[in-house]
Length: 338
Image (cartoon, rainbow, N blue to C red; front, side):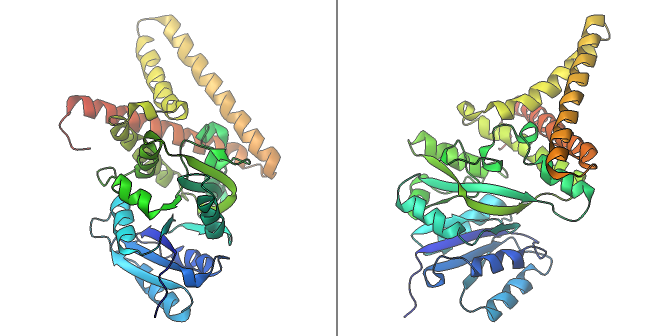
């Protein structure tokens, strides 16, 4: 008789043929006993070779139990819900298809849960370039720099403790059932919303840097801009339900973008506004240059002096502009579904 797994690793997936093999191989080599673990992949009807690669891997590696379920709605939160409901484990470990967990990832996550350190446990991203080249390297460096991500501890923390959110996360199935799953009306920020509900019910989020996972950043500035536009746009939808969950790192980009727009318009009539606009741009540029120098001093690659400030600018302005646009559309279309 097949043993009921103690841990279910759930993965929402869509067109991830380039990285799905890396993820599955890393799960195959986890220190946690494979006989107590299953992998459930919710595929959003991938149009590339993702499913073929999963099937081939499963056929060649029988020690890792892998199942694929259809995610017909083709969104991340729906994929998470479908995968968890199809799983059987007492503990749920969430991962993304473009991530590669360290060998101790599952074992450390389950250990922290069993020691009741948190209701949702997560670790630190080790952000890697999505491809070769100076642009991709710059994006990866910017995505873990404090000027780019503020106090998002899961991108750089080196000490364990409570946090406002954790990446991916590991939790008990009973918590999922208690909260009613992930909110499928949010196409992004579904994890932050899930964690917000945990905190509102008195639960604790635990961030442990010993739990490490490699995460592949977006490879181009265009894809980075789309990613952060999506983040900013859907953050407003989440804040409409939980306004108290706003963090300063999330508020600064839209305030900065809005301030620049206001000063630029005011400068038409008020010369002092033009001076303030130029001052703000110069100070921001100086901060960007210093961030580039900081990364160059660590990595010794001169092209990052240009690439990191460029990537951070894309992150800030995409997030900030999307946040403002989402807020405007919400005001003028209050009945629009979130």
